[in-house]
Image 1 (cartoon, rainbow, N blue to C red):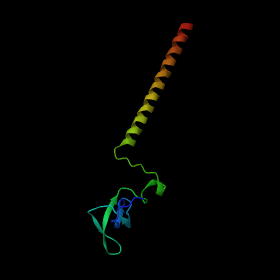
Image 2 (tube, rainbow, N blue to C red; image 1 turned 120 degrees about the horizontal axis):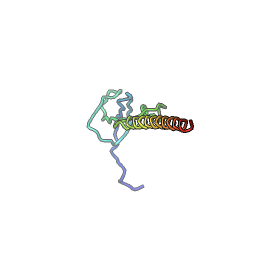
Image 3 (tube, rainbow, N blue to C red; image 1 turned 180 degrees about the vertical axis):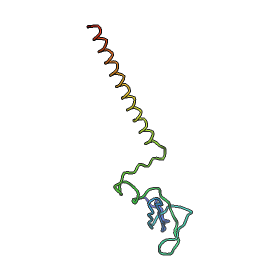
Image 4 (cartoon, rainbow, N blue to C red; image 1 turned 30 degrees about the vertical axis):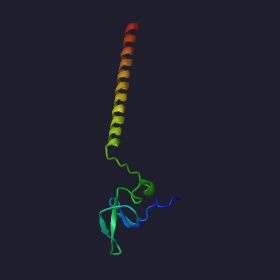
Length: 109
C-alpha cells in the first residue's frame, strides 16, 4: 500500500437512518456539521442516511419501490393503456369478422 494516501482523521460518528429509526455509532472520516447526543450521554457528529440495513429491501426481505420521479406509475399507466388498445383492436377485429360473415351469407343466399 502507498503511504500517506489513506485518511488518518478517524473519529466517532453516529450514522442515522431516520426513516427506519435506526442509528449506530462507528468510526469514520465523514464530515458533517450536525451533532447528536448519543445514548452514552456524549455528543457526536451526525450523518443522516436515506437508506440503511434497517430499511434496505435486501436486508429486510421486503420489496419496497423507491419511486421519487413517478417512473413506476408512468410505466403502469403505459401498460394499462397498451392493454386497453389491444382490447379495442381485438373488438374491432371481431366486428369486422362478423360483418364479413354477414356479407358472405348474403352473397350465398
